[in-house]
Image (cartoon, rainbow, N blue to C red; front, top):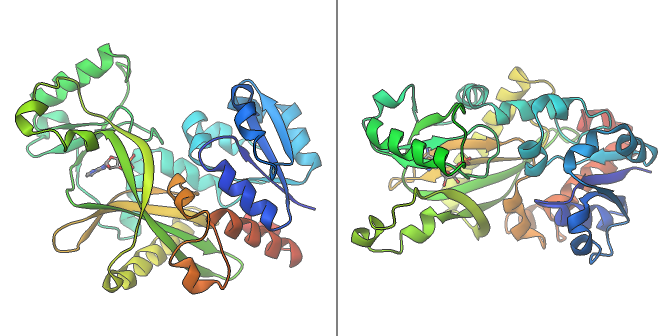
Length: 341
Ligand code: AMP
Protein backbone atom coordinates (compact mmCIF):
# COMPACT_ATOMS: atom_id res chain seq x y z
CA UNK A 1 0.00 0.00 0.00
CA UNK A 2 1.09 3.53 -0.72
CA UNK A 3 1.91 6.01 2.05
CA UNK A 4 1.68 9.78 1.86
CA UNK A 5 4.63 11.71 3.28
CA UNK A 6 5.41 15.38 3.65
CA UNK A 7 7.58 17.83 5.62
CA UNK A 8 6.19 19.04 8.95
CA UNK A 9 5.23 22.61 8.11
CA UNK A 10 3.11 24.68 5.66
CA UNK A 11 0.05 22.45 4.97
CA UNK A 12 1.26 19.14 6.41
CA UNK A 13 -1.74 18.73 8.71
CA UNK A 14 -4.23 19.17 5.90
CA UNK A 15 -2.31 16.85 3.55
CA UNK A 16 -1.96 14.05 6.10
CA UNK A 17 -5.52 14.34 7.42
CA UNK A 18 -6.77 14.07 3.83
CA UNK A 19 -4.57 11.03 3.21
CA UNK A 20 -5.79 9.35 6.41
CA UNK A 21 -9.41 10.01 5.45
CA UNK A 22 -8.69 8.19 2.21
CA UNK A 23 -7.30 5.24 4.15
CA UNK A 24 -3.62 5.76 3.30
CA UNK A 25 -0.69 5.51 5.68
CA UNK A 26 0.68 8.92 6.71
CA UNK A 27 4.31 9.84 7.39
CA UNK A 28 5.76 13.14 8.52
CA UNK A 29 9.38 14.25 8.23
CA UNK A 30 9.41 16.32 11.40
CA UNK A 31 12.00 18.63 12.91
CA UNK A 32 12.62 17.63 16.53
CA UNK A 33 11.62 21.08 17.74
CA UNK A 34 8.12 20.53 16.33
CA UNK A 35 7.61 16.97 17.55
CA UNK A 36 5.32 18.07 20.39
CA UNK A 37 3.05 19.92 17.98
CA UNK A 38 2.65 17.10 15.50
CA UNK A 39 2.21 14.35 18.12
CA UNK A 40 -1.10 16.03 18.97
CA UNK A 41 -2.63 14.72 15.77
CA UNK A 42 -3.53 11.03 15.80
CA UNK A 43 -3.95 10.83 12.03
CA UNK A 44 -0.15 10.98 11.63
CA UNK A 45 0.99 7.35 11.65
CA UNK A 46 4.74 7.80 11.68
CA UNK A 47 7.14 10.63 12.44
CA UNK A 48 10.65 10.60 11.00
CA UNK A 49 12.51 12.93 13.33
CA UNK A 50 15.26 15.12 11.88
CA UNK A 51 17.32 18.06 13.06
CA UNK A 52 16.66 19.92 9.85
CA UNK A 53 14.54 19.30 6.75
CA UNK A 54 17.52 18.80 4.40
CA UNK A 55 17.94 15.41 6.06
CA UNK A 56 15.08 14.26 3.87
CA UNK A 57 17.82 13.91 1.25
CA UNK A 58 19.81 11.46 3.40
CA UNK A 59 19.88 7.81 2.48
CA UNK A 60 18.50 6.80 5.85
CA UNK A 61 15.41 8.95 5.51
CA UNK A 62 14.90 8.01 1.86
CA UNK A 63 15.12 4.32 2.77
CA UNK A 64 12.45 4.64 5.45
CA UNK A 65 10.15 6.40 3.02
CA UNK A 66 10.88 3.93 0.26
CA UNK A 67 10.17 0.91 2.47
CA UNK A 68 6.67 2.33 2.96
CA UNK A 69 6.09 3.07 -0.73
CA UNK A 70 5.79 6.71 0.24
CA UNK A 71 4.91 9.48 -2.17
CA UNK A 72 6.23 12.86 -1.08
CA UNK A 73 3.85 15.80 -1.33
CA UNK A 74 5.92 18.92 -2.09
CA UNK A 75 4.91 22.22 -0.52
CA UNK A 76 6.30 25.72 0.05
CA UNK A 77 8.69 24.68 2.81
CA UNK A 78 10.40 22.11 0.57
CA UNK A 79 10.93 24.80 -2.06
CA UNK A 80 12.01 27.47 0.41
CA UNK A 81 14.55 25.26 2.16
CA UNK A 82 16.02 23.25 -0.68
CA UNK A 83 17.64 24.05 -4.00
CA UNK A 84 16.06 22.81 -7.23
CA UNK A 85 18.99 20.37 -7.63
CA UNK A 86 18.33 18.95 -4.18
CA UNK A 87 14.62 18.53 -4.86
CA UNK A 88 15.30 16.90 -8.22
CA UNK A 89 17.72 14.47 -6.56
CA UNK A 90 15.04 13.04 -4.26
CA UNK A 91 14.70 9.36 -5.15
CA UNK A 92 11.22 8.59 -3.85
CA UNK A 93 8.31 9.61 -6.09
CA UNK A 94 7.16 13.20 -5.73
CA UNK A 95 3.49 13.99 -6.33
CA UNK A 96 2.95 16.18 -9.40
CA UNK A 97 5.89 17.36 -11.48
CA UNK A 98 9.12 17.96 -9.56
CA UNK A 99 10.76 19.48 -12.66
CA UNK A 100 8.32 22.39 -12.70
CA UNK A 101 9.34 23.42 -9.17
CA UNK A 102 12.53 24.87 -10.65
CA UNK A 103 10.33 27.09 -12.83
CA UNK A 104 8.60 28.34 -9.72
CA UNK A 105 11.87 29.17 -7.95
CA UNK A 106 13.64 30.96 -10.78
CA UNK A 107 12.19 34.39 -11.58
CA UNK A 108 13.17 34.41 -15.26
CA UNK A 109 11.86 30.90 -15.91
CA UNK A 110 8.72 31.75 -14.00
CA UNK A 111 8.01 34.77 -16.17
CA UNK A 112 8.68 32.74 -19.33
CA UNK A 113 6.12 30.10 -18.38
CA UNK A 114 3.55 32.72 -17.37
CA UNK A 115 3.95 34.49 -20.70
CA UNK A 116 3.66 31.17 -22.55
CA UNK A 117 0.37 30.64 -20.65
CA UNK A 118 -0.78 34.08 -21.84
CA UNK A 119 -1.21 35.25 -18.26
CA UNK A 120 -1.31 39.03 -17.95
CA UNK A 121 1.94 39.59 -16.04
CA UNK A 122 3.22 42.95 -14.72
CA UNK A 123 6.14 44.38 -16.66
CA UNK A 124 9.57 43.56 -15.27
CA UNK A 125 11.91 46.51 -14.74
CA UNK A 126 15.38 45.68 -16.03
CA UNK A 127 17.42 47.90 -13.72
CA UNK A 128 16.87 50.29 -10.79
CA UNK A 129 17.71 53.23 -13.08
CA UNK A 130 14.53 52.45 -15.06
CA UNK A 131 12.15 52.79 -12.10
CA UNK A 132 9.68 55.53 -13.01
CA UNK A 133 6.50 54.22 -11.36
CA UNK A 134 5.78 52.23 -8.18
CA UNK A 135 7.55 48.86 -8.28
CA UNK A 136 7.81 45.86 -6.01
CA UNK A 137 11.24 44.38 -5.44
CA UNK A 138 11.34 40.63 -4.90
CA UNK A 139 13.79 37.96 -3.89
CA UNK A 140 14.29 34.63 -5.67
CA UNK A 141 12.39 31.52 -4.61
CA UNK A 142 9.45 31.03 -2.28
CA UNK A 143 10.50 33.57 0.32
CA UNK A 144 6.87 34.13 1.34
CA UNK A 145 7.26 37.85 0.69
CA UNK A 146 9.93 38.31 3.37
CA UNK A 147 12.41 40.99 2.35
CA UNK A 148 10.21 42.27 -0.48
CA UNK A 149 9.81 46.03 -0.68
CA UNK A 150 8.22 48.75 -2.75
CA UNK A 151 10.13 51.58 -4.36
CA UNK A 152 9.23 54.65 -6.35
CA UNK A 153 12.63 55.65 -7.78
CA UNK A 154 16.22 54.48 -8.13
CA UNK A 155 17.21 56.51 -5.07
CA UNK A 156 14.38 54.99 -3.02
CA UNK A 157 15.41 51.50 -4.23
CA UNK A 158 19.05 52.01 -3.21
CA UNK A 159 18.13 53.39 0.21
CA UNK A 160 15.75 50.55 1.05
CA UNK A 161 18.06 47.86 -0.32
CA UNK A 162 20.91 49.17 1.85
CA UNK A 163 18.67 49.18 4.91
CA UNK A 164 17.65 45.57 4.32
CA UNK A 165 21.28 44.56 3.80
CA UNK A 166 22.37 46.19 7.04
CA UNK A 167 19.44 44.53 8.83
CA UNK A 168 20.68 41.22 7.31
CA UNK A 169 17.30 40.53 5.74
CA UNK A 170 18.82 40.29 2.27
CA UNK A 171 22.45 39.72 1.30
CA UNK A 172 24.69 42.11 -0.60
CA UNK A 173 25.07 39.91 -3.65
CA UNK A 174 21.49 38.73 -3.90
CA UNK A 175 19.91 39.30 -7.34
CA UNK A 176 16.67 41.18 -6.82
CA UNK A 177 13.81 41.11 -9.27
CA UNK A 178 11.96 44.35 -9.95
CA UNK A 179 8.39 44.37 -11.22
CA UNK A 180 5.74 47.05 -11.74
CA UNK A 181 3.37 47.18 -8.79
CA UNK A 182 -0.18 46.05 -9.66
CA UNK A 183 -2.84 47.56 -7.39
CA UNK A 184 -6.20 45.89 -6.73
CA UNK A 185 -7.96 43.13 -4.80
CA UNK A 186 -5.65 40.21 -4.08
CA UNK A 187 -6.88 36.86 -5.35
CA UNK A 188 -4.95 33.60 -5.23
CA UNK A 189 -6.67 31.14 -7.56
CA UNK A 190 -6.27 27.52 -6.49
CA UNK A 191 -6.60 24.66 -8.97
CA UNK A 192 -6.09 20.92 -9.30
CA UNK A 193 -5.28 19.28 -12.61
CA UNK A 194 -5.90 15.54 -12.78
CA UNK A 195 -3.66 13.77 -15.31
CA UNK A 196 -5.82 10.67 -14.79
CA UNK A 197 -9.08 12.36 -15.74
CA UNK A 198 -7.30 14.96 -17.90
CA UNK A 199 -9.47 17.57 -16.26
CA UNK A 200 -8.93 20.89 -14.55
CA UNK A 201 -10.79 21.61 -11.31
CA UNK A 202 -11.12 25.04 -9.74
CA UNK A 203 -10.83 24.60 -5.99
CA UNK A 204 -11.01 28.02 -4.38
CA UNK A 205 -9.63 31.47 -3.81
CA UNK A 206 -7.76 32.91 -0.88
CA UNK A 207 -6.25 36.17 0.12
CA UNK A 208 -2.96 36.49 1.92
CA UNK A 209 -2.49 38.71 4.91
CA UNK A 210 0.95 40.21 4.86
CA UNK A 211 2.72 42.13 7.57
CA UNK A 212 3.68 44.88 7.73
CA UNK A 213 2.24 46.14 4.45
CA UNK A 214 -1.31 45.36 5.58
CA UNK A 215 -0.95 46.95 9.01
CA UNK A 216 0.50 50.04 7.41
CA UNK A 217 -2.74 50.73 5.54
CA UNK A 218 -4.41 51.30 8.91
CA UNK A 219 -2.00 54.05 9.89
CA UNK A 220 -2.72 57.59 8.63
CA UNK A 221 -0.23 58.52 5.91
CA UNK A 222 1.46 61.33 7.90
CA UNK A 223 2.28 58.79 10.63
CA UNK A 224 3.33 56.14 8.11
CA UNK A 225 6.35 58.25 7.23
CA UNK A 226 7.47 58.26 10.87
CA UNK A 227 7.64 54.49 10.81
CA UNK A 228 11.07 54.48 9.16
CA UNK A 229 11.36 50.73 8.69
CA UNK A 230 11.02 49.25 5.17
CA UNK A 231 7.59 47.53 5.21
CA UNK A 232 7.75 43.87 4.23
CA UNK A 233 5.25 41.42 2.68
CA UNK A 234 5.69 38.59 5.17
CA UNK A 235 2.72 36.19 5.00
CA UNK A 236 0.97 35.75 8.35
CA UNK A 237 -2.16 33.91 7.31
CA UNK A 238 -4.89 33.50 4.71
CA UNK A 239 -8.60 34.11 4.44
CA UNK A 240 -11.27 32.88 2.01
CA UNK A 241 -12.71 34.75 -0.92
CA UNK A 242 -15.43 33.95 -3.43
CA UNK A 243 -15.42 35.64 -6.79
CA UNK A 244 -18.21 37.26 -8.74
CA UNK A 245 -19.65 34.38 -10.72
CA UNK A 246 -19.12 36.30 -13.95
CA UNK A 247 -15.35 35.99 -13.39
CA UNK A 248 -15.30 32.19 -13.20
CA UNK A 249 -15.18 31.47 -16.91
CA UNK A 250 -12.01 33.50 -17.27
CA UNK A 251 -10.56 31.78 -14.19
CA UNK A 252 -10.99 28.36 -15.82
CA UNK A 253 -9.49 29.67 -19.07
CA UNK A 254 -6.42 30.97 -17.23
CA UNK A 255 -6.02 27.63 -15.44
CA UNK A 256 -6.40 25.69 -18.68
CA UNK A 257 -3.93 27.91 -20.53
CA UNK A 258 -1.46 27.36 -17.73
CA UNK A 259 -1.88 23.58 -17.86
CA UNK A 260 -1.41 23.60 -21.66
CA UNK A 261 1.67 25.84 -21.47
CA UNK A 262 3.22 23.63 -18.80
CA UNK A 263 2.66 20.54 -20.97
CA UNK A 264 4.59 22.24 -23.79
CA UNK A 265 7.39 23.69 -21.66
CA UNK A 266 8.07 21.24 -18.85
CA UNK A 267 7.02 17.64 -19.26
CA UNK A 268 4.84 16.02 -17.92
CA UNK A 269 3.10 19.35 -17.26
CA UNK A 270 1.23 20.93 -14.37
CA UNK A 271 -0.14 17.85 -12.65
CA UNK A 272 -1.82 18.11 -9.25
CA UNK A 273 -2.47 21.28 -7.26
CA UNK A 274 -1.26 24.73 -8.33
CA UNK A 275 -2.11 28.36 -7.80
CA UNK A 276 -2.18 31.49 -9.95
CA UNK A 277 -1.68 34.59 -7.85
CA UNK A 278 -2.59 38.16 -8.68
CA UNK A 279 -4.91 41.09 -8.30
CA UNK A 280 -8.18 42.29 -9.86
CA UNK A 281 -8.22 45.98 -10.72
CA UNK A 282 -11.20 48.36 -10.74
CA UNK A 283 -12.33 46.96 -14.11
CA UNK A 284 -12.12 43.38 -12.80
CA UNK A 285 -9.07 42.87 -15.02
CA UNK A 286 -6.70 40.30 -13.55
CA UNK A 287 -2.93 40.81 -13.39
CA UNK A 288 -0.95 37.78 -12.32
CA UNK A 289 2.39 38.24 -10.58
CA UNK A 290 3.10 34.70 -9.49
CA UNK A 291 2.30 31.01 -9.67
CA UNK A 292 2.93 28.14 -7.30
CA UNK A 293 3.39 24.78 -8.99
CA UNK A 294 2.25 22.75 -5.96
CA UNK A 295 -0.21 22.96 -3.10
CA UNK A 296 -0.37 26.43 -1.49
CA UNK A 297 -0.89 27.08 2.21
CA UNK A 298 -3.97 29.12 1.31
CA UNK A 299 -5.82 25.81 0.78
CA UNK A 300 -5.62 25.30 4.57
CA UNK A 301 -8.68 27.50 4.95
CA UNK A 302 -10.74 24.84 3.17
CA UNK A 303 -9.83 21.76 5.24
CA UNK A 304 -13.53 21.12 5.46
CA UNK A 305 -14.10 21.59 1.74
CA UNK A 306 -14.31 24.70 -0.40
CA UNK A 307 -17.39 26.39 -1.89
CA UNK A 308 -16.34 25.46 -5.43
CA UNK A 309 -15.50 21.83 -4.59
CA UNK A 310 -18.91 21.45 -2.96
CA UNK A 311 -20.24 22.01 -6.48
CA UNK A 312 -18.06 19.23 -7.90
CA UNK A 313 -18.14 16.63 -5.10
CA UNK A 314 -21.05 15.47 -2.99
CA UNK A 315 -18.75 15.09 0.00
CA UNK A 316 -16.30 17.17 1.99
CA UNK A 317 -13.15 17.47 -0.09
CA UNK A 318 -10.01 19.31 0.99
CA UNK A 319 -7.03 19.71 -1.33
CA UNK A 320 -5.13 17.22 0.84
CA UNK A 321 -7.90 14.68 0.39
CA UNK A 322 -8.08 15.41 -3.36
CA UNK A 323 -4.38 14.59 -3.69
CA UNK A 324 -4.83 11.33 -1.78
CA UNK A 325 -7.87 10.47 -3.94
CA UNK A 326 -5.79 10.93 -7.09
CA UNK A 327 -3.04 8.70 -5.68
CA UNK A 328 -5.59 6.01 -4.83
CA UNK A 329 -7.21 6.21 -8.24
CA UNK A 330 -3.80 6.02 -9.92
CA UNK A 331 -2.80 3.04 -7.81
CA UNK A 332 -6.03 1.21 -8.54
CA UNK A 333 -5.58 1.65 -12.29
CA UNK A 334 -1.79 1.11 -12.32
CA UNK A 335 -1.03 4.68 -13.31
CA UNK A 336 1.07 5.88 -10.37
CA UNK A 337 3.82 7.00 -12.76
CA UNK A 338 1.30 9.41 -14.30
CA UNK A 339 0.76 11.34 -11.06
CA UNK A 340 4.35 11.40 -9.80
CA UNK A 341 7.84 12.24 -11.01
P1 AMP B 1 5.03 36.65 -4.44
O1 AMP B 1 6.20 36.01 -3.76
O2 AMP B 1 5.33 37.04 -5.87
O3 AMP B 1 3.76 35.86 -4.29
O4 AMP B 1 4.73 38.04 -3.71
C1 AMP B 1 4.44 38.15 -2.35
C2 AMP B 1 3.45 39.25 -2.16
O5 AMP B 1 3.90 40.47 -2.74
C3 AMP B 1 2.12 38.99 -2.85
O6 AMP B 1 1.28 38.20 -2.05
C4 AMP B 1 1.57 40.38 -3.07
O7 AMP B 1 0.98 40.93 -1.91
C5 AMP B 1 2.81 41.18 -3.35
N1 AMP B 1 3.07 41.32 -4.79
C6 AMP B 1 3.93 40.58 -5.51
N2 AMP B 1 4.03 41.04 -6.77
C7 AMP B 1 3.21 42.10 -6.87
C8 AMP B 1 2.88 43.03 -7.92
N3 AMP B 1 3.47 42.98 -9.12
N4 AMP B 1 1.98 43.99 -7.63
C9 AMP B 1 1.43 44.07 -6.43
N5 AMP B 1 1.71 43.27 -5.40
C10 AMP B 1 2.60 42.28 -5.60
